[in-house]
Image (cartoon, rainbow, N blue to C red; front, side, top):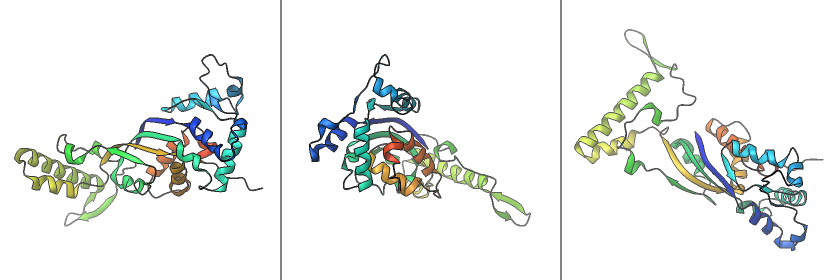
Amino acid sequence: MKFENTEVFNFEGALRGMRNPKNSWNKSDSHLCFFQNDECEKCLNYINGFNQKYKACIDKGVRWEPYYIGENDMKLAQALIAAGSEHAKFLRQIFVSVDITAPEYIWSQIDTYKIGTTANSTSKMHRLANTPITQECFEMEDYDGRIIIYNREPYDIDYDVSELWADIIDRCEILRQKYNETKDMRYWKELIRILPESWLQTRTWTANYAVLRNMYKQRCATPHKLTEWQAFGSWIKSLPYAKEILLYEKEIV
């Protein structure tokens, strides 16, 4: 599972709108900070250094305008988050775009989060028959080909997962080749029908911080059967202000 070309934007607009209900813009202490020469004392003094926070995101492949959230704005943001999603509407205006390459079985779960998300995917309909089908086309990160399925009779020869995969890939590739040779749609239809759900698909996916916060709580905060959600959670943690906003929970005193 891969996350590429991550972009985060509109902190400025979201936090400005956060103060609209009480017309409290004069209390805002946040700003864009491009610190070309480490000029901004506020940013450099923020927790362990805003400069370092920004550079850490860049090192993880996340692009965003370096926006410093001041103490006043962060206090209000966290209070609204603690009050519930109906009060934390500003999270819906912090936008994220990313290219995700993931198996179809995880996309079916991601697709349950439809509100505030959009995706443009690579197309099986148009591209499936164009390139050879190999093991690299499937999600295999925690693959263990040594798992025994059954013992063949009468020679008691083990049949394991690696052999099963070899059979599946070989037959899928034969169907692909037969379709290209004959242009008979029946071969293409059977290929689509039997293609494993671990087939990798890339989508350019957009969401917002409200959606991501909800996804993290429901899928990533506790161990999930699908290890791909752990990767998704790690990506969420790499985003700007993840700890302070996306993972924030009100402290119980």
